Amino acid sequence: MEDYSVYDLKEFYKKREGRLVRRLLKTVLNEIWPQIDGLRVMGYGYPLPYMRYGYEKAERLFAVLPSRTGGHFWPEGKNSLVCLSREDLLPVETESIDRLIVIHGLEHAADLAATLSELWRVLKSNGRMIVIVPNRLGMWARAERTPFGHGTPYTQGQIISHLKESLFTVERHEHALYMPPFRSFWVMRTAYLFEGFGKFIFPGVAGVNVIEAGKQIYAGTSHARKAMPSGTRIFVPQPAVK
Image 1 (cartoon, helix red, strand yellow):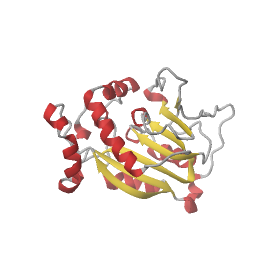
Image 2 (cartoon, rainbow, N blue to C red):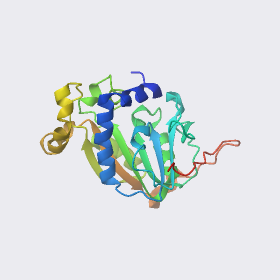
Image 3 (cartoon, one colour):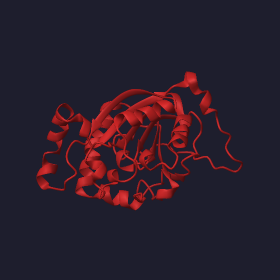
Image 4 (tube, rainbow, N blue to C red):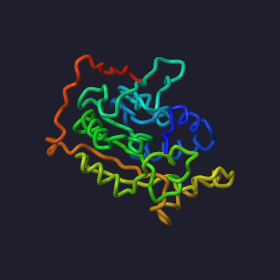
């Protein structure tokens, strides 16, 4: 199954369905990280819709998009805070990121272990990462007209296992996106009702898995710091746009 391009992702989030998905998942992100003032925040995959609001007080704010998907300027009309990168060689300093948001990234990784290794490298020892991936058991993983229906979906146990193998410690795990992936007016009108009751009635079939993780630093020998190839450019983010 072919990956969504960055413009497919951008177009999805312009639609009513995409805007609703963004609001639902942003609510979960805000519950997990209610306060990020003064922190350095990086997004990976296609995090741009989730970095638009509420992060104005971050010390640094930028996004890294995999080069295979392409990219676009963001935020529009201002200096871009986006760069493209290889999945296995992020142009970001080691242990420089306080908060890392990963969405529309891991399910498309050509080498999941290498990608997680790089995310581990750039995260500070006391940093936190939120990973959002399609749930293999949910209906959204089968909705090919959405970005959640592309790539490799994971059960909660599978993604937690991959994170632990890559020396992350799981701090919290949630499910989200309980409404069916239908564009029906009535389904979208009752989306928040689905979110409220879904976790109690059918948590296993939610659309996405949401995992908060930290670094397991005492066993980090397998993540030996890699020397950047000569001539590699390092992305230096500017302060968040006020």
